[in-house]
Length: 236
Image (cartoon, rainbow, N blue to C red; front, top):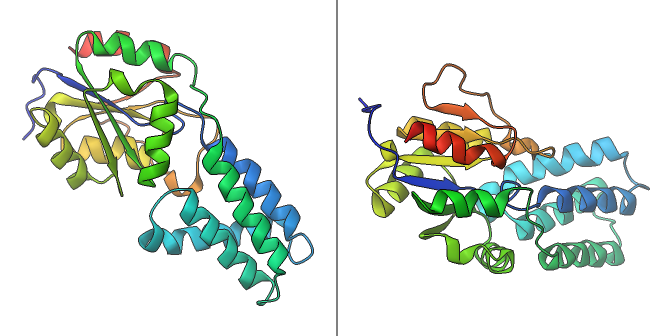
């Protein structure tokens, strides 16, 4: 049984679409993908087939741009019945390389939220995806020096959070996680005994959708990060 009066000592942040923009670049590439294959299938069909491929491939490639590109290529081969031109494959690879080079743009209130909470609590970054890409984004964000700990993981599950918070602080019961994904940033943290704070983003990957844990005593939702410092102070 988790002791609800335990003091909050650690505040952890998700990265993509919590601190900086990310999903918008996937949406732009979706449009490019649909245009390249418009001769073979309707956009809605292409997006459905691509989502199926991404879901199948998560166990093989994990999260991130490289797995996304491989799923696009796989889908292109399937919908064209293996007749996709090499030039289209080359353009899909180019699109992925462009995504890996996109500049980092912080979301509103991101820097101030991290800086303010860091004055009173231990702050962490917990993100998933390709190691090199996530390291690049963190370095370009200018936020790296603010974090007491950084964890780049393959999956965000309850056991992963239990392990991370046990190693970096005094357990999940004393920790809070802030993010834009109910599936990855909120529900597994609450199951681990911590606080889960949902900050919605206007764009959200279909594979990150989940049901909100309404009624959970350690669940909170904020319209944006400008409200975070007040919530942290309220909880302790």
